[in-house]
Image (cartoon, rainbow, N blue to C red):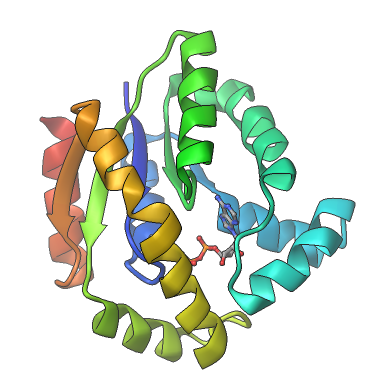
Length: 183
Ligand code: ADP
């Protein structure tokens, strides 16, 4: 049973890799970024509230996310495992997920996708998503370093952290991830 969190900076390739792995393993890919973008496109109340934060590259407030994640993990397809990217992004979100998994009597592991800042900036500028403006990218990286990197220690202390060098070709990264997941 695979329950996996992919950690790493924005633009590290978490979403792409999560998608591939999820397909290989036959489990759902849960991306809070994608869920939020869908909510924005569908103009739901959550989407309307989230839009301003997303376009500036800021974190969407927890109250919009926690219910979204709780609901998603309680859907039937998530009972056979999942790969999550973009969540948790703060220690508070990680503590929430920890509690949720305890309630469900489940555990998860975490892989940190390591990519240097200058590489992710270049990748994001080439990607052309609406929130990939230089200003928003700079904010996302700043938020990543202050809010999300503490999670590396959070999961390391729980002995559930592994790392993969994400500064390689898509296929090479996928291969390393597959090996780690199988081990
Ligand atoms: P990236 O990894 O390139 O930043 P994501 O798709 O993961 O892209 O996230 C896009 C945006 O969605 C973030 O900049 C943020 O505004 C919002 N978002 C996604 N996940 C979270 C989260 N767990 N907590 C707060 N905001 C989030």
